[in-house]
Length: 129
Image (cartoon, rainbow, N blue to C red; front, side, top):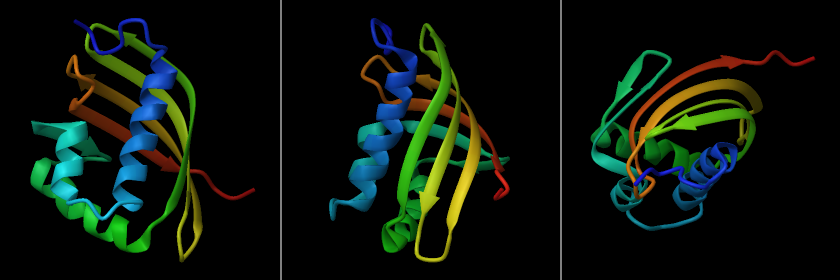
């Protein structure tokens, strides 16, 4: 069974990121439980060359929860085959200090139940016009 079977890849990846973010910032639930709901125990996520495993994702959740940023994903393109997905998106973030817009290029592998097993992201801050 494939995680994207019958689901538009753009919708899948937008829903994944939105739900994960919302659960982290709008809940007092244990961060480890939230990370585990969206990621496999052997998760490896590399963002701009920085490797994060399960423990580092949980650690990363602390400042995110403290700052409670608002985020909006705008998925421009996404393609999926088997358990892999590639997407080009724009992430709009608003936090206490500033607004930020990032171009995001994502390549990921997901389990049949929709949890991320591997993720590679490259981002670029979009300059203000």
